[in-house]
Image 1 (tube, chains in turn red, green):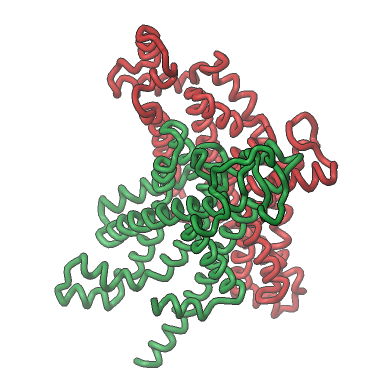
Image 2 (cartoon, rainbow over the protein chains, first blue to last red; image 1 turned 180 degrees about the vertical axis):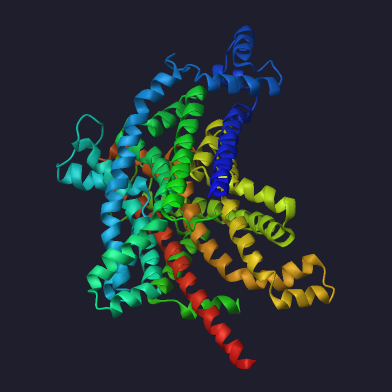
Length: 305
Length: 286
């Protein structure tokens, strides 16, 4: 247990270090001189020199790396080139919006996928099973940027039931949540199905059936509970898909979250904001996976690395 | 080739249909210059956003360009990127995974920690960040997708190697004095081909989707080159007056991704079935 915990923590720390280093190096991926690229053509050499100095580009790479870490430790993420606003400020505004969207999508995904996955597993090989499996494969194959606009056309334009985009009221949350949530459900249904099938072939199910327990109780009381164990980890991993999907979904629905902030900043070459968004999204994902793995190891003591 | 035929015969109807859809898209991509009724960049501004007619089966886009022609050339870009990315990822991933699983030791430890780290971050986020700083365009897009693509192959092949390397026949060939390269290439690789083929098909679906996603975000293929993703992006501002701008590229992406997913899924079932029946035949023979 403690060895597992240590290894898992170690991985999280190494990953965090890797992400921070990657984000630090990104500035050096800019083709040519970063300061020149930021100021654009027609910048005077003095201006470029000043910016180079303020970015620390005149220092050695090791020195810059040190500085990056110490700024990060003090949560000084710099200021936006575009608005001059401190990046921490913009993150604080957009982060909750992304969490709201991803969590509501996860809820919708769970609500759709758990009953359907269990049903497909119970009727494995049946027509019901193949319909559910095929529809879920269809769901996996529709990108967010196709499903989102199609939903807008159907439910906001043809049938004007819901707002097209924005985030003023609760109704604005519905379409982006359906876009992200159904895609998640499509992935989850398949995993719950195979996890359930696996669980249903175990001896204890036979015992439960042999002692005369009703099929409903066998499935929902015994099998589902055990089948859900691996799903905990999957939910954590799928959160990454949700966060990545949020980048696109927020762009489609003008949802002022961290993903939209990131894409807008990329378009205006607002590098400090982009870097902070990448950090924000990755750190969230790493922490959630660390958390789910720890919860899982508590729930199921058999888990070992 | 014979192996592919064996695969095909075992596929379900839906999966066979998918094989034909994929073939159709490859042919469309290959012969786009001959099939396309109009050049993809020629504009007819008075007809911008016009719906479909006899001469323009899918209508005009926001600059008065023929949508069908752009879709055909878009298939070129889409398949060019995905085939390059999947081939590159599979080669690099298989090589690294094979070394990792065959030699074990510190190189395995190092590579697998790198794989762990890369899998702990959403892949598409890495690709987006790379292109955000490096700049959009075909070349950077391919590099970005390769950067994240090799990981799953490396992990898969390493896992398979750990299983296969202890088989008697591997010990036998090694005892007979075969060099490591020969053992890996001639004896181990053919035995791990099935899961690799499955992964490649699913990987194609992922690559088509990833290219379209990045192009949709304005980080992939740059105009005037047509990409399904960037067509959808441009269509967004005309969603009220011209939904056909969204529907046709959307259908193209969906059907191609779905076809690759169906084939991959069916192959997974078929290969497990084949390998099980293969074991039975082998057991009866001995």
